[in-house]
Amino acid sequence: MNLRLEQLVNEPSQVGALGIEEIQQLISDAGAILEREPKLVTFDREKILFVGDTHGDLESTIPIVKRFLGGGYDGVVFLGDYVDRGLQQIENMNYLLVLKILYPDRVLLLRGNHETPLANRYYGFLDAVATNFSVEFYNSYSKLFSRLPYACIVNGEILCLHGGLAKGLNTTKQIENLPSEVEVSTPILFQLLWNDPRERIRGFAPSDRGDGIFFFGKDVYETFAKNNSIKFMIRAHEVFQNGFRWYFDGKILSLFSANQYTIPVAGKIAELTPQGDLTVITV
Ligand SMILES: [Mn+2]
Image 1 (tube, rainbow, N blue to C red):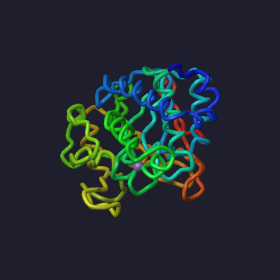
Image 2: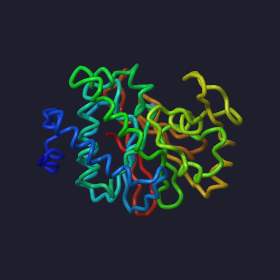
Image 3: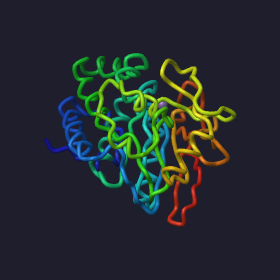
């Protein structure tokens, strides 16, 4: 099968017209690339974009990809949560797979808590795949999700992951050794995908998101950052009406990049320049 990937990237509306065999091909090709990626990716690049949750909002992803392709960037880090909730979940995921296959070394797709069956059963992606294709076909996606990397370190000093730091996580090295699980049962991995930073708490505190999920305080971040020579962290996972929030006196940047969500959002992405400046940009 000859998928015209360049054409699909430039005409994203055609991604919605892909048949099941073509999508299977995308999943298979992307899976082969992801299988070679470590769980903690070393990502040394000059000019990079960082993208928060897109949640099936293809209309927000399209201009982000356009900026990446036309703006002289040598890297883009998507921080997870590509599916669930939005209007074009399958299309959004497939579009990002096309991008990954075309530019495997420049595009990084991290795993979010919504790249799991636990979330997909409740928030729409399993239903979307079952309605358009079949319940069985969903397994192709869930297996692919298990291969997504969990974190990256940019230029030796910026840690990127979807949720937050975890109880028992002391070194970035531990992330490298986390398993590829379809159903996430390893507590450290579960927390990487689900935890949130919070001001004015010390250590970890139970999160209202559910059992086994925690808020972590500035002290947790500072200890981890010091021990691992991290200068800064970029994560996603939380919706803000203005699309972003700085935590811990500017040490953690939280991004949300979908404009169409359960509430109206002014989605944001971030840009790192070769000079090391980090700027928040409206999608
Ligand atoms: Mn999330």
